Image (cartoon, rainbow, N blue to C red; front, side, top):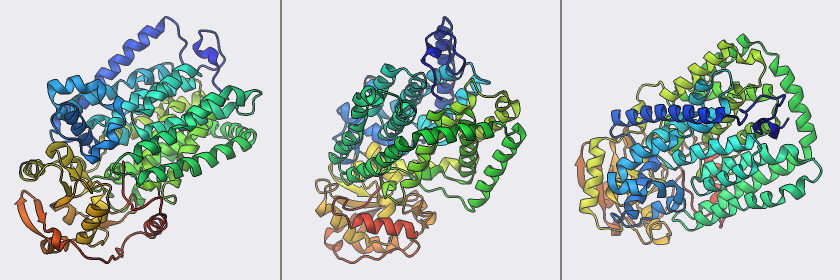
Length: 584
């Protein structure tokens, strides 16, 4: 069931989904901006309360703004972000006045909060518009990115606006907004691509003249993965481009073909299941949400947090339970809605999230982050007007409120350590800037590599959390990275930096491999190939002796998950892929 264009044309429609564009449109803008201001105040207050709290990619943006302002030289790790100009150009004048770090910390969260305007436009005739807006914008991963300032913070309001246009069948608005997302954040762009095919194109694919009408748009959006592949090829992480094309072609292309072939049957099944789901009493929905959340919490028998691998860094027991609960109720909501586009979007994102591991695309991004967008679509299905009244009962609304508030607050002891940088780590980064030559690189873990880039203006090994802990001999690996490139051929690794938490708490060597590795013997190994030149406040830095880093041999880490080993060996054997790594 598609959304009639008349809904936004000011004419009567039997389906009250999105607001009619009447005189109330101006009031919608005022309320949306007021909600955005409230969210911005909350996010700025959070950042003021946690002075040393910046998320991973935020430090890349700090470095990019510093480069554009003439305060630093362009380093390889920042190349990827330099391909997305809309992420930083609007804030460049502010950066000149406030400085790069304060701009990323305080201005980007304000921009991310503007997503409240299109969110309110979608939900203002629903059962609880303000609650719905907060539910959309306080999802666990998206909230953290918006709080701390990343390219995703810029992409989020654009995505919600594009989603609004897609549901309203406003083709020009959707295409223009989608084009802006293309140059903003690659993962949000991929989800926007999914929105086009599932919400805009596929539901009408069996109508007469569909191919002729859609051909220009199909060609336009089909070129997106090629653009991303080109941008990845230009970076120090050039091994990403074939992996990205693998996901787009194998997963996306085949899924689109299968959906097109089965569309009449898919539509019939969606309508049939939707009728059944819509009859479920509210109390069973609420009890099901609680049960699924409890099971998710119990299955996470230990805290799964890591020192800083994107969503893996917030995948503690509370967040696992929250994701399980939200995915459950959102899946029911899109089915109860009976809206074919939302059902296809939710299912496709779930399918892609499942495929990232066996295809090796977990090296590009983790599938958990796709769940954020699936949940966003599900919450629109639940909180927008037009759903059966029993699905808008206070009990369901309250259950959703409790779940998303818990997710936004990330109710788990020790949440600060997942993102915060200590004063000692700041001091070590400044020591690196003062005591190393420009143009060199530092081997360290994921989180510290980005602090070094943004604070010390030095390049670092973003995938260090992986190869430092997976049993690979450190010296020969550094020699290989320095000589074979392209990452460090022009920016050789001359120092290694370890922080206490890397050894005492360990690191996840693979995306969702559930392998937390602790290797205290790294200290002895590094002492054999370098000299300790900095030991202070839980941070140790070695200056490497290049003559002592050579050697050969490799051993697999015994505790690495079988699936991780399998995908590493398979994709490592393909000449087109080359060496492995991680990119967010």
